[in-house]
Length: 608
Image (cartoon, rainbow, N blue to C red; front, side, top):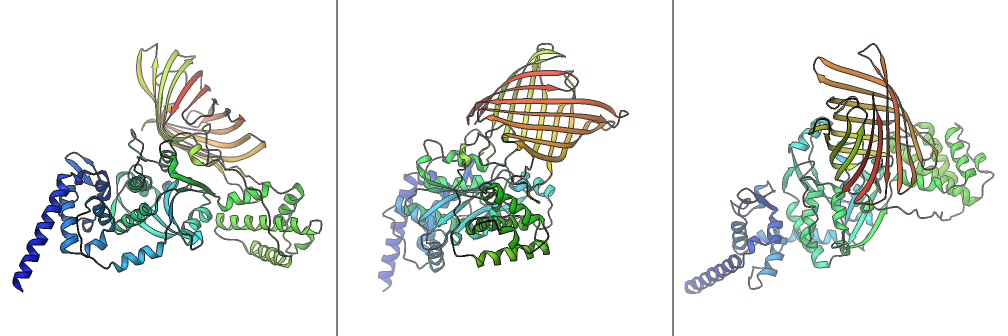
């Protein structure tokens, strides 16, 4: 008996040794898939994993040594068979690469239950549009959705990556920690109805679903790796190792093409969507589906009502009476159904926006539902509204070369670099209408007068949201607002007169006619040259954005400032810009600016 056991041990050791030798001799530890499974990234001394959880590694040096982790994995799978249940994706890949490796059979009960719960035949990348009400959501969000034919899509499972933020951290703390790596990031598994409630309903954000054409074995491999990641943590960085980056790295293993753009030290959700739809990867996208928010559904239905139907909607909302039948006497049953369905969307929108309905609104909604149920059963038909998907928008990073003439110092040239994201004149498919979000925007100026280059302007952040009402109904409007912080010229009649500035405005917006969006606001600006030289200016501002054609869009802003520190001295300012061409990669612009002097410029902008 002892002789038999000795022979078995010798056979196992010899087989294990040959497997290790084969793995190392074929350089498997440097294979891109293996490095991706470990989340190894290039470092100063080779590579290092982004995973911080010690139990993710079977070797003590696995975080920094992919070869030792490979050997440790092979050894553990044979000597500790249950370790195969912790790392099913590693097992799948190793069996493909080392067909002669024979791992002991093992019953992975929990993993098999996880697989049965998903029942996934395909996977989708879901893009949630930006939400300016939260710093974490301004640039959009990405998640993975695993689709099953056996249930409603709301019961499909999703994987989401994000930072775990303590309840006590405010937005400023969140921004600081998010940028500096003060939070740990985790993958979480939730049903799709939770994501729909969060994004579509609660935050009124649109969802764009990119269903991927992947064979079943790749879907299974992706699920197996996400099982490995679900209890592991990484350091979360708002602009780099964020949801977009981590999901892109996971998808790269099955798509086998890069999804993170080269030449950028930051990663935005939109960039991943763009990379997924480039010519060499677009064949992976099987279908694009739009899931409009509750707000967008209200807008789409309201615009399809006749004028009489819209008037009835407005009367029902504005009049206090709950005796609603009188408003519908002149309408057919089909028209009444359309009106009530639109009103239901309206009150659902108001419920989200105001964190609940008032008692009169609740009573009115109940009366509307009772009236709807009293009508003959029928299906309301609405026209499908064509929406332009996010990958058709302009790219996010901009390089701009300008030639300009300034009344004070003559001819000059300017070079501008904007890290991201978009402005009021950008091609803004699937972004918040009539809004802007610019971060890390640098402008250098070269003048003939000085014959040297100087930093003229730096925008740390600039946010504008005109919040235009699409229906004119009560509650479908908010303050038009904007905030910005950076370093810019305080006037245009000199070369070297830039100061640190903090600006903002609040007001209202309206649409005088199709194609024009206007706003009227009270604006303010704080100019800081030093602790002893601070100016505060405030005054009215009026502006507009006119879309003449998709190829020609122009914006104008005219205002006046009272200098509160210089006996209310009054100054006017003007900015008029135009964008020509409609292309993802370039456009041509012109601008006229006035602030104690005129400046005229022509700009060529390149986007990537």
